[in-house]
Image 1 (tube, helix red, strand yellow):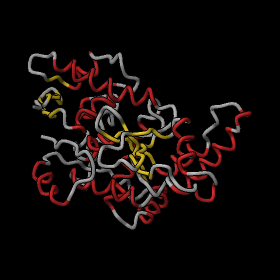
Image 2 (cartoon, helix red, strand yellow):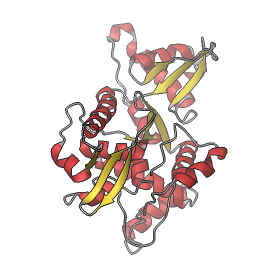
Image 3 (cartoon, rainbow, N blue to C red):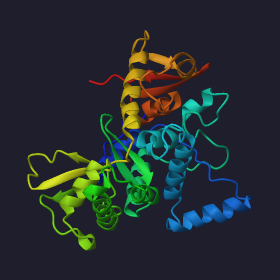
Length: 318
């Protein structure tokens, strides 16, 4: 049984429990040591991560998944997909004759580099601390999306005003972006951050932090979140990618639709090959492979090997 995806970074006290419940392991492709291009590019990446093989594996996985799903989700991947690839082993890939990477990275021959759910959680938190990755808020699915910090900075830099020039929108947005890049991005790795109500001066950008954050909310870069009764004096914001509303909606609606279709089966289970052939999701633009990997990585299904391919069996939750 795959472990349920934790809602955030694991506490030390939780580590032993997750280790005991982790039964699926993955082999991660380190590439061909005889490939000169791999040697120059990947060794440089490994060195930039302090020589950590675990961080290298996780970041490489995020990049491969982003490339794979770029047509439908151009900027980020959900954390559940990383779980499927590195913890679940991308078992669904074995059932797709046309695409060996269909359900995740799959298993690769050679020396296996084993990662557990705990390894992935700790590694993602470390990549966020190193300002390599950021987490974005995915409402409705209890998960986060992952994006490289440099890419997010570029998205912020290219943001265009949404109001007429006569309202001084270009200047207010420029100042807000300067404040955001200097004081928020990299300092707060996401998916949310807090600021004191009323704010202070907006650093070297002028204005107040509240003014700048309001501008960024209006431009769909931030989402204002409820602070809760225990934090009456702070404002809470979640990071977003502008224009990603349809993708986020697809994450939620596609998961619910696929679970509903599997639930209709007699034993609430279905072969991966039949899911691909028979189910056409009406409420998602992400494609069936994304949602197969999402179900596995989220711990909503068990992956059962059979003589005719992998089978997804819904896990009963109270």
